[in-house]
Image (tube, rainbow, N blue to C red; front, side, top):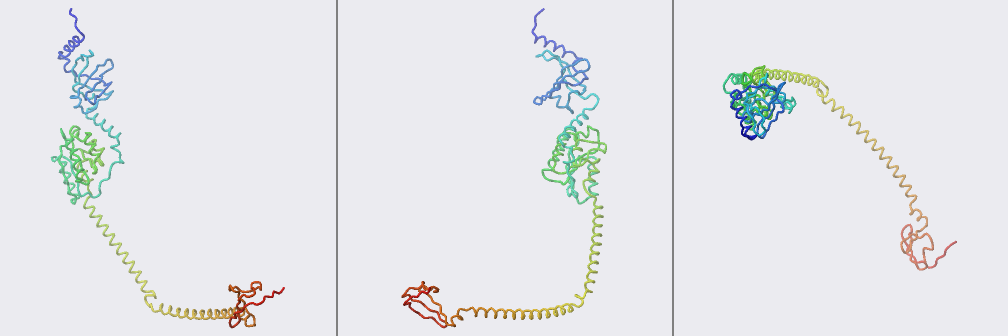
Length: 401
């Protein structure tokens, strides 16, 4: 027997596995474990196992990118794969080409996975939802140009609030490119501030038909919109990710139009009611003012204004007389006090003393002489008499003890 290498052995075994038509397309059910997603390459590596055995598996990027859901550990799946051998390790494994959940549909799992992730980010929180404008003058509509939904929306908007202008942006609502078409429309409305409120939706259909409104790009575009968004997808029993992210969910497109705008007839009725209340209030105020004016006109100050002026004139005369009498009395008392003070001052005046024969002496420096020791023989002194002064010179000084 010839000796072969390990590589030759592995290659031979691989050719046997790949040459077996029964192993070229095998449907296998199992539970995922050891799941790894290489985000750079896009390949998925995992182990499929059941109660008795396990097999390694790989799903290359070309097939993995087509999955509607994200595989997870513990998830039961059914795969279509081919069986081969990885020559480098000599381990046989399966190469998965298709995968679907075992039991629950792939779309339903993808829906629940995205819903859980976006809820964890807070995109469904009521606190971030904005109120709709009370009187929008521009209503943006993003839906298919065909179908009953767009007709229903236009009919309801025109009937309820014809003052509002409808800005319509037709988009794909299902199939390839639908998600990108919806996202682009939302972004264009926001970039151009083309509406006061947005209605995003379509008519009813299967989960596959509504899937564009369950895709993550649409959900994030709705959440990022600065214009309030009403989600109107499908029928009342249909729920999409777009419904949870939007500021308001409407059960149908027609209901979305009703929620977006007020009813003109009700507004007119309200205005008429306000007008009637205003008129009633004005009449009440005018009636009250007229009654008050009538009462005021009956008062003496308006009916006979001279009565008050004459009375006040008499009071003024009385006060004037009192003031004059008080002034005379006060001036008389002041005159008497002044005369008494003048008499006292006159009695204390030095001139009175001088008139009795006394004199005041002033030294050479002008100081008043009170002591003989302030004067020396030969000093010039000045005597102040009652009617003038005398210039003298001291000849002798005699001090008395």
